[in-house]
Length: 398
Image 1: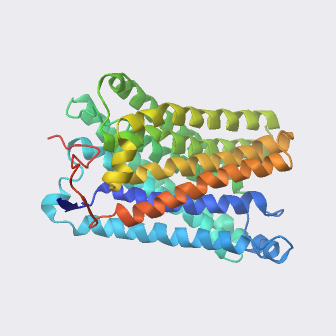
Image 2 (image 1 turned 180 degrees about the vertical axis):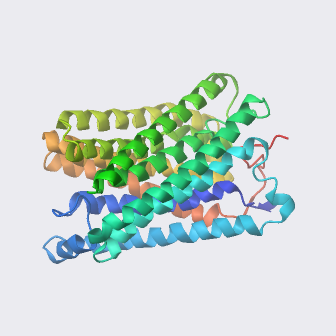
């Protein structure tokens, strides 16, 4: 029986992305289950008060998970960047050749997550951060503008290659949604300043940039669906690319949070009349769309051998594409329950507890899968070569 080692891939950057998403997912518990009357999000000070109150014994555990996963996120990010630079030049030059050009979108995607996760870490662990937020939001906007420009230039380059017929993503599923995911992650970053800054030019700029980012996200998604939709019916999907079929789930989550924040900005900063029914309907439609994606994509993933290949037989960088769908479903579900259904009285008491418990199960299962991949899907690990096939979800074309 032969064995081989897992090779480094740009898709290993999704490990850092998954850790960052999981860190934020634990922060969501703090946001919806602890009081923070003086700010729209929990802070170091509000959490200190909540810990000292009766029933706050669970908070230190959740705070610890935020910290552990944030450290994992930044550690994996640094490792990923260094690993790419340390590869021999002849290998490094092939990482983004041909169809793998789309992997250039992973860097702005992961770095945008880093900025968003940094905001969460600061809120939880830095005393007095909320009092200086107006000094920080302009720098956050600048960081996201740079990432937006980078992502746009790389996406346009990839589109140019597509138009010149130099690329073909047949059998690669919806891997091109990496660009859409990057734009959505940057958009949710813009929306934080839009919703939470009290400085007029900052929140106005945040709203404008959020709308521009959302437009780019939707346009990039439409391009992928137009270009790849017909081929999905004709060409069988490679097992290693099946995780891309679920990428719409986290995209809808970050885009949904951005839309929610822009609605809150419109309501509080610009006096736009916005009923609770509109908020609930928006979150509900997006959540149902996520469920639909799972219902449609999961059978395809299983039939194509995606779970068997990415989880059981050949864990690899592409395996981490299975983490963000679980994180995305949990986070948007929490928004729907807490900011959508509960305010209308559609969930109360035990029904709310059941909903939170179901979402907690999704989070726990996703965390367990992430830990499994850290052990089995990282470069240098040995795996059984008995079922060896192409372990790269995008085969290079020259």
